[in-house]
Length: 253
Ligand code: NAP
Image (cartoon, rainbow, N blue to C red; front, side, top):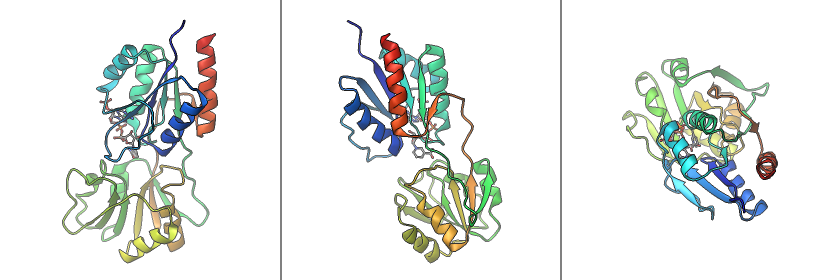
């Protein structure tokens, strides 16, 4: 009897949670391990074996893949989690394992949008004009790069507090993004925001702020996604499940 397939699902997105649920119901008996970085505390209980924390770079991940007899890796991390995606690509290449990526499409500007695209956090920091009041929707890892801009006022929203506290006169909003454009407009209005800084994460769950900026006519400094190694990629959970079905069938043949 051959061992069941073992899928390692690199998580950290809403789509990864949905995929974990779909895989359990679509392929009963499948050996599935979901992996979280462990950055946020309130992790969902997906009802499947879960591990938390880094692997220890590419070498650590390759060791995990071998030790655990993983047969397929799904990279469903956030589009800006570039290090993990690169490590997954290299480890799978080294171990000759199939890798599928699940990546939601990037947002595209509408005609009324006032986007200023930039390719990096550094460029976003420089793009803010002096004396601007910026809503910085960039996350706890990147926020400190904006701290040297003592000539601006920043409002930062994130789920967990940043390691280095915000400059004293800035404001920290500890919350998940609202799904209501009205609520986001009210947040931007009450703080007198003049610029929104956002990563092009894609998806619906954090889009309300982009819609709010559009309705208020505010400029958006939009940070492009990092370039990742080319690999087989799906943009939806349903398509990923179908691609997984093909890989599992070919592993059996
Ligand atoms: P990153 O810079 O690409 O990864 C940094 C390190 O964290 C990786 O090298 C790896 O450590 C560990 N790691 C990341 N994802 C992991 C996972 N799913 N399982 C186990 N270890 C993981 O990632 P990040 O930007 O810090 O994001 C961390 C997590 O938050 C990711 O799972 C991502 O999907 C999620 N997230 C990120 C963003 C964002 O904007 N970056 C937004 C929402 C959610 P080792 O090298 O030790 O293996």
